[in-house]
Length: 397
Image (tube, rainbow, N blue to C red; front, side, top):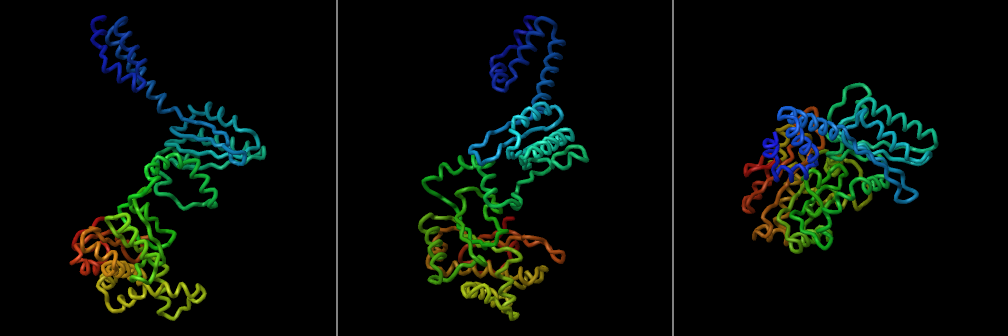
């Protein structure tokens, strides 16, 4: 047995077990093989390994964090697998929160069972009875409410993508600093002295359009220009757009110019309503003047623009047809702009793309395609007449 035990000892295995925290199990296995026998030693090692795995799985990191400033609430962070095994630690941590204090419980669990849920809710009621407040924030992969009436199960992450914010803006800022700021800081550390985005992304100011989310982009990836109707004005008509194009192309050397429209666009609806005699004077004269930049798109629809015809044949509504024609018209404007046009022609900016983002699928038609395309400049005028998702030159979902 001594010889067998000696053969089990390998420097590489010792280093691996030391790095993974399994050195004690490795040592006990070798000792049992030497002083008992091979079978018993291996069985004892397997039993210890299984117990160690169970302990790791059932252990729930539960911590309390004192307020950074007196006006901030106490924080209780809970992660991991939350079962009755974690109740002693949960109760100990919760009791450390002073009576009457405001508290936030951040639940980032992959499993919550009935007993854990009941214990947490009981403490919430008890703490509120002392005059304190308890705000339960769930951002893990399990639905806390489900533990009341069904077996625990994993769910899709509740904050990927981010749901609409339900609390006031300042509370949302506080939540960011509590939960996300430490993760974002390393990402922006290298951007502190400058930026190097690869794309200028022209989008509507609509609050439902999130450029970074729909392009899987992080800090520093997109230079974003937003306005009503995601329009590109002709040169000299708007200093903001002209300067943004110049900064993106000549200053930052972006590789892509992107026009992003979306379904159910308010600007497109306003153009259609205006054509039917609606009065937008309550929005002020500036709104009417701005719509002038999108009126060529409406004219193009009335003239039978190929994008509009194909969108209508595909079952899209009138406003969505106009939205798709609008991105085609704005994309074409880039060719005539004195900054963007030469950059596209000469290859300094290799790509000009457009996309139409679906916000919802109507019951009477298929969901809008959300795609981009790229064409050589000499073909781009033809490509711009194809609706998003059907450009023959290739499309990327």
